[in-house]
Image 1: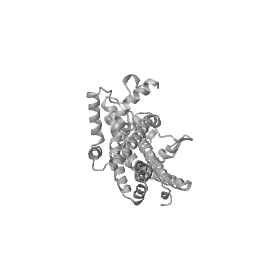
Image 2 (image 1 turned 60 degrees about the horizontal axis):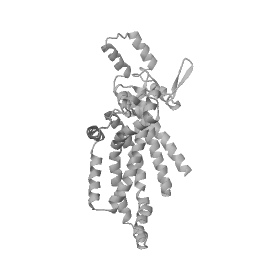
Image 3 (image 1 turned 30 degrees about the vertical axis):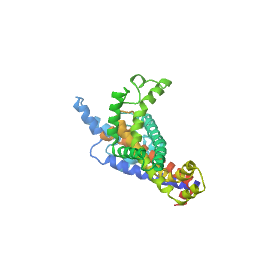
Image 4 (image 1 turned 45 degrees about the vertical axis):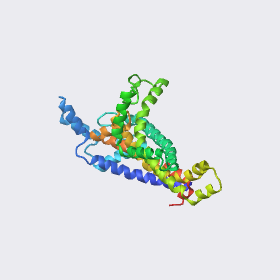
Length: 338
């Protein structure tokens, strides 16, 4: 087991290195830069920016440096005036061009809410999908099974942004819920307290419902299909012939084997959930990483966009690692499959 985990960790490091190169090249590919956009904005409102100021800013932020030098400064760091300024690997993500703030200060507060929403949506999807999938498989071709199947198709087909808008309108019109954001106005800038936590929970159910809807519908279909295959296998029929209680046959023997593909698919559902969180965050105006990432891309804020992309990639790769470890723990055959 230890060798399996070490091997997967080495794969993870190599994957992140490749992702860092690809993401940096993609962010650098479009013409222009964040400094050019900022200068145009300042001139449009009447501020006079001299060429000497522009040259000083370009030198400060290394706008005209070669791509490899920019990548080295971002990942490893740089020496300036005999002092070493760390890079991404040391926790120094650089400074945002547009916000004039350290990228770490902009990212960490929002990343916590993003991880909370993605993790909560994943847990909610599994808690709903497994029991409903089992019920649908054990009550095949019944009226509840047809209803569940219909809801599955709707959940898979409807886009996250459209579902967010529908839930937003319904919650505001028929439930009188306070929508938009994760906090009410009095609690937005207030320090953490019991009242702020309660207010957060009151706002949390809408984005979690929207984010988990598609994954719940897909996982339910996978669970149903897998369990139907397992229920037709010989060892299940043997257990029933021996007089084992049906509930024990289903949950101890059949579900335990049918859930393996769901664990394997956990690594693929995490990208969907985090991507859905970004879209829902924009629609519902949530203080998460999605809106910040979109603005960074629009403004070509290199360090901010690259750092956000790398952190999201790290979450996805770590999620895949945890899924592999969970599968190896549940099914030892996965350890020797490589």
